[in-house]
Image 1 (tube, rainbow, N blue to C red):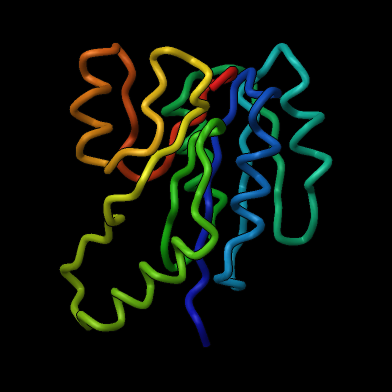
Image 2 (cartoon, one colour; image 1 turned 135 degrees about the vertical axis):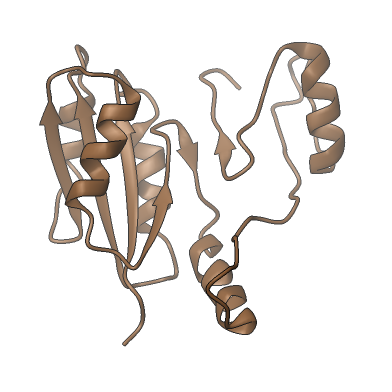
Length: 162
């Protein structure tokens, strides 16, 4: 049987971008997955947005606000997966990210493998003067340091208005 992957999404006041995040998790080509959203006491419509996606594969849990670490730890406790994909509520996954990483894991056949993602191209709206347009990941990271932006290495960070 294929391994189960748990996609853990802690969310706090993320109503604006959470739907995109959930769509990218649901759209994974790796079919054997569970998605766990922890609404960490949001004061906006985050829980409502998350509940629109609730199903047998998408579990939504609301908790009192205790911060990111507590929300992630709660999601870990609920997860049943053989592998874990942490995903911030404003991140997106490439559709085949998990499938490609698990294929790479099988090739190595070792218990001491760390999975990561390859460099990718980033595209932002070109109407903004500070746009990065399309550049290699290495160039993007170098330039982003000068503009005050940052990117998490495991997923693409979305920002409203980009």
